[in-house]
Length: 271
Length: 156
Image (cartoon, rainbow over all chains, first blue to last red; front, side, top):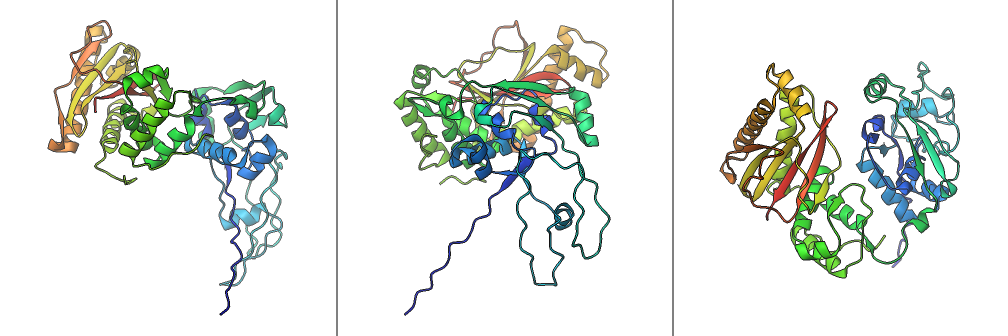
């Protein structure tokens, strides 16, 4: 009897790009510098692997960072309609007869490449559609090229769409600076355990967003006051806190509460 | 195992409550309130100028507070054409707002969630006689450039 060995299926890497209305969510938002460094790469579509290449973060952390940015609606999965795709890609194949699917083209240019002023015309279009004017980027970014050695990043947001212009008019031009003196790896030294991955797991279990945050509230409600006080908890952001738990009693209590309230049988190990 | 879409879960009820508050701003204020980043608070946050409290019991036990600055209340008073904008008008309006929210919540939840009559206080009034939670969830929001917050204070 023979055994057919299947070649492992290649996985498509999701690419993420800034959401059209990210300016709405940037106002008053505070995030760790490592997350902003990832966000800085998303002016054009970027995969977790590309984030790893450009920031030196490990793959899991890069994926987590993209998920966190997506949850805050700052970025979204990069998807295109077929017509948009062939308009934007000179190498695109013509539409094949029914039942035949053209292979995918390579990912768009790396994030550090300057955006072309005008989209390249499609060269292999069956019906010769009218050229589509490129959508100007919502956010124009000026940043040092290597995030791992960034000491200062200046973001200047300029709106392009009518919608974005309206929001910008209401909010004023947003300009902010991030300063970092250490590499991402050096930013989370030492002992203890990051609370963020645990919080993320609970929030995800609750369905994400507000529902997930409310579940996290109910989980923390089960933690005895004296343990919370001993751990120094007085206020904890459910979105961008970088709290590190030092007290093992808090971890134990949190595990138990997450199991009882959220039905989580295990929690992620330290990030 | 807890289901991710369990509509009987307390957080679903809380989500409905929060949606009712947001609907209030959309309906009466003419535009939606934007929810900002929530925080867990082990020390009850300082109240803004006027706070409405809605005690709840049943699936949830505790209270839900809506704390608003006078500037926001005056904008709302403007919206409804109320000429008085003094402190007393702000307190009355906050009481009315929490009554409307409570009524809408009662209509939604029915007997499953018992809602006591709401009360409103100014920031310099004594704290109302309500059970103090071990911790609360603060949900800041922005409406028309002003910031208020919802406080979810469950005891269990």
